[in-house]
Length: 390
Image 1 (cartoon, rainbow, N blue to C red):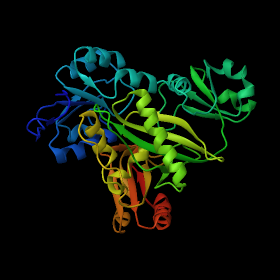
Image 2: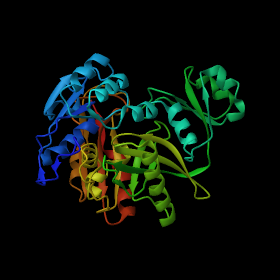
Image 3: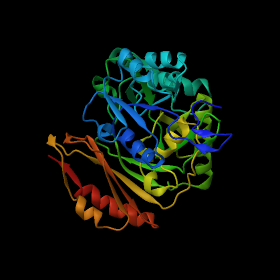
Image 4: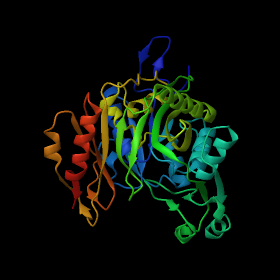
């Protein structure tokens, strides 16, 4: 029997004590996964450098330590059967050694190595005939100056970027000075009409499922998702194309786990892959209320080789991120939450972070309604009235 399946095929028993699941990273993504895992009596053991990380109060065990340190990750993983991540920035070498020792690491270290480096990510698309925007590798400002024909473009750091950080837009020669003087990717602007995303999952048995496509509306200032609309306002043809391409990506990666794929939708209906994330993602938070199986439950189903859950939409919805307000640092306080809670179909998720700072993700809010237009209108009001201050 496959080691990481908790279903005994001979007796058909569901044994929640047979596998020790380790999680690298104790942030809000891990917290929401644990909240779902509790319903199945699945124990989740967490490693994170912050003793007050969101997972610290609800994990089965919580170990304080660096997820980028070789010895710490190796020691943490030695008594675990299956290890997964909620962030890509982990020590790959330690995971490779644990894999050699017979531990199941999902997503696999070779996959994490590709995805955490945007240069390797883009090269993977090119090598596997997966559609993506034209790009070149650059090592710093000088390389950008030598490739002015590629401007306008987005300059992305190859490693270390997250939540809109590590990306800068170079619209003209005058903007080159704002580029990164470090290894990166220069990616040509493309004339897209929408930014879409699909969450897809695959388990060790080869089963795959894709969630309905969502549409993301980004803050022009922070380069973060401000609104997420589920389902996306697209044709059935584009919906089918997006799901098929998402499954193609996870199959070509031969990846086990959950994968978020962000797309640019072009005017002619073509889709280009922007970026991928090998974990639960901001573009799937709405699935807690809006779909039969949340992305967080799907995550542990996939890495434990359990049957994957149904992804159908229960209700349309809009998700908004709750970010720390500008100029506020300190113990978190929330304005407008009670008012939001009084509205039908509104769900609040706070991430257990005790302190706020500007633009820090402190929670999210999902507005559900059979009428997506009404949900959008209500959500746009909340973005102005629900605030995180100190």
